[in-house]
Amino acid sequence: MAKAYWIAAYRSVSDPAALAAYARLAGPAIEAAGGRFLARGGRVRAYEAGAAERTVVIEFPDFESAVAAHDGEGYQAALAALGTDAVARDLRIVEGVE
Image 1 (spheres, rainbow, N blue to C red):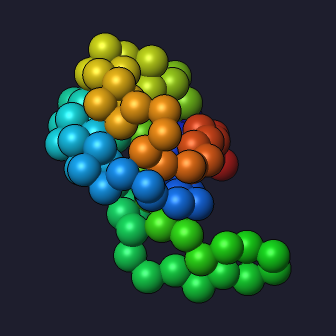
Image 2: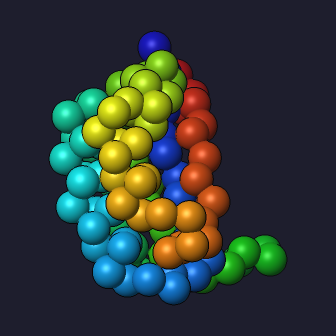
């Protein structure tokens, strides 16, 4: 079974306090759902029209687990703490190759 990944790229952060509140809730919710952080805002070099943005990559055992983690109560509480205007980001769930 192929693993799956959350890939989040943060274009901007306008409310660092809301992002911190989100992180306090999101990390434990993601890990409880089987997620493992592979990259979390370290150094970035962008190529080919990319943007050097804060990027987070989280691995899950499979695609269904990744979707369930996002839709689960714990992560939804984290999103509520983040609000709608604190960050501009692109979050994708992608299935890996076997």
